[in-house]
Image 1: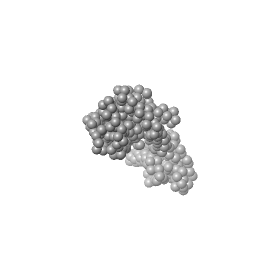
Image 2: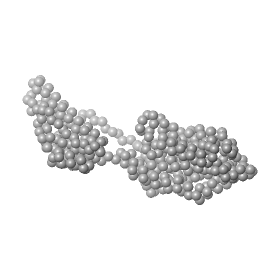
Image 3: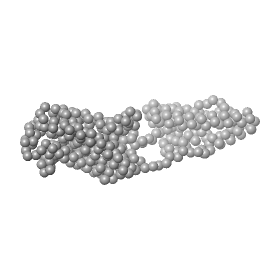
Image 4: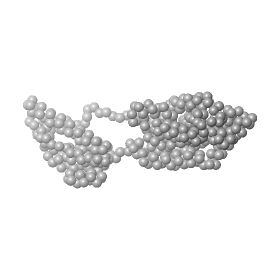
Amino acid sequence: MRGAWVIAMKDLKLRIRDKSLLIFGILVPLALTLILSQIIGPALEGDFSPTYGLVDLDRGPVGAAIADAIESQDWELIRYDSEAAAQAAVDDGELSAAFVVPDGFLAATETGEAIHLGVVGNPDASISTLIAESIATSFAARVEAVQLAVAGGIVSGLGDPQTLAAEAQALAAAPDVVRVVASETGSRQLDAISYFAVGMATFFLFFTVQAGVVSILEERQDGTLVRLLTAPISSMTVLVGKSLSSMITGLLSVFVLVVASTLMLGADWGGPVGVVILSVAGVLSAMAVGLAVASVARNAEQAGQFTSIIAVVLGLLGGVFFPLAQTSDTFATLSSLSPHYWLLRGFGDNAGAGSLIDVVQSASMVVVFALVFLVIGFARRHQLGAAR
């Protein structure tokens, strides 16, 4: 064990001396976390603050109801005196969309005359325009209900048109008898800063950790591995030493990122126990991939290329840059094969309403992934010292 520890410390000193741990293990993940959280973060957070315009030429209850619907969502509403002014504001990008209530709208609804409730949409704000269309469609449906009620009352001889129209409008404006109310529950989703902090940490963890195991091939090329194997230590001691240096490097990188992203960026990783469990699982998975690749690669350059490709593919599938699992069922299935997916899920549970059992379950999936590659790596460990 002493020999393995000496090898591990030697590799760790080299990683610190060449600054690869500092650059790829700390600085680059922190920088990308900050950049991605600023660029993609608002979309993930669901920040939505459209600005709507209202041209109420009828100056009746319909325009007032539309204004109430917009302002009840805390969206900005700007009133205009003409449709041309609202259209110009939409064209200039000042408005997401504008509602136009034409003059005589209420009177037309009472007489059954065809009249249009207009929506002027901004092509650059398609979601806001769709919401505006939905609101207008909802009001149009209520108007049609009023007209049908009045027409039915007239045919049935229940009263004069004006009285029936007033009663139908009052019923249409009354609060809904049945309402669907959202019940707030604890969230298990990471906020934007935390999501990218975890994502970048797990993404670069695979580069940081795998370099330690792959360095066996570098030592084989340089001839130093032969000297180690001729020393009174076993090949397993060399492998354990390399793996130990990788584990220390990975855990050190994650620890610094957790502290730095929390203090500097306000990231929330959750409880320390969950962070430790998931970090160890992530390091094991990265070590396992590196070991398996090193056992089949012909040289250090080839191993570096293979590990980079695997790390990028697994990171993309796992959703370290954006939640790929939400795009389709196919990608959701593929994402679940990546350890990054389970790490992100586990940290989400740890920082949110999930329990420690949920965290352990996610970590277990990562460990299962690691075991598969560890079996491959240890089964072919004799190839690490063979010249090829």
